[in-house]
Length: 235
Length: 235
Image 1 (cartoon, rainbow over the protein chains, first blue to last red):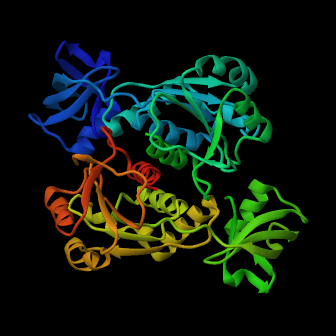
Image 2 (image 1 turned 180 degrees about the vertical axis):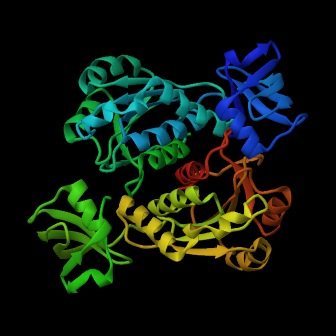
Image 3 (image 1 turned 60 degrees about the vertical axis):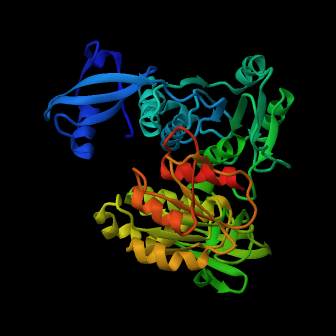
């Protein structure tokens, strides 16, 4: 946790907050902070700054807040992600958010197990928590927008194409002939398939709407590793 | 598991293996394979190919093996990693191995908690298992060499410098002024610090022996995310 994220409801006045629960626990157990200590804070979807501890107990943490800087700019990348296994989903949302991705579309694919769509981890509360963990890691404040698309075809054939003009659309595909490009300018839309990859018909659909299949080497990487490696390469 | 790694002791003849335990379980529960099915296999530190299932039960899996290809070339990168939290260590070893890193030095640093060095996850057996998980993910066969250095100074001041000539030495440091370079040629030695980073004195020591501090952007990334992102950028 490289900063403490504040919700609007945490504020008891314009410059004071009162925290309980997960964030208080973290400050108690990890920071082991005491009155007078200064902690890095950021308001969700807002500015950054420092909080000075006024009072801390096992029940509550009171801080006075000074906000002084804007969050880092977003990564110009929209992620189209085939729904991974629930455990992997959590890690991937947090990692993607920590790298500055602010738009994610989680989609169905042939090789996505139907049961994954029943996972409680897809609940808005959990997606928000995982995003917050990513922001707290990165030192960012802006929550991503995460959309769920349980039907592949309507989303990829109809909705997605209208958003592509002016953007570079890439499909991560271990079997692609082309290497992923380096140091691109402008906005990228990056699609990453499920374990085992998109099936040929899905790859064809992406190609038809303008996606370029690209690979990242001879090795097959886990989704969060592939995503980080591609981002390092693209930007 | 994108391939099944075979140990020399699995072979019952030059072309036949008998498996039990973790790999049998995976073939039963995930592949749901039956006699006659073909699976991708690789011999640890050796070649790749296919195994044809001759017999499978809850107790054993017998396959006939055909080896036909060499593993992908290693990534020309040696990783110097401050010992992370035990849970993070496992993920990082597996991720590093999956990206083709074949040399890792795990070192101490001021901000590494002493208790981490007592973790059973540092046992050779666990490091080997995590490496195998990385190889199975990537479709690779060559285990990395992982060395542990419980003393920072003797390793960084005396041992490490003798191995640096002809290589590019980079230190991942969120506070560095320079961006990480792109698309380098030759071999890289990459040092990554603990949570909270190397302290100033440690950064100075690395600089004195020829490391260039480089950052990867405005955000602070988890070690395995930072590593993947840097690799995507460097190679």
